[in-house]
Image (cartoon, rainbow, N blue to C red):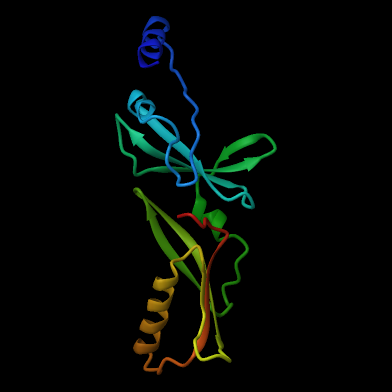
Length: 170
């Protein structure tokens, strides 16, 4: 297979695209030789319910894999999102409580995302921590750090954290 693809590419001086399958674990399915055969391995990431997709390089023989491309799925196909921060922050209320802006780095690209939090009293002995697009353990750490910084004793409260208009796989 490798020999045939290589000869075809050299003979016709054309790029060859091999399209593969990703298994449930997120790894490339099939023999590892396919991954060694190619110069670049890229994959699309995204949720079915969102119109945005991330193009991420998993392998790049000639450059960095720390960069991503963000695209919007439209009726005309994929359209590049040149300023994802603007898209993710559109329509927000600047005066709403429980909302803050977080900056994340994807490669050399800073992206601003809106983070929403809601804290409510719990009726049970063990408060719940629910997060969407955010690590539950980190959510608990942030809540504890906030209570310590402001001098409040941590009361038994439920806490929810959500990255809005954003990815859940980042």
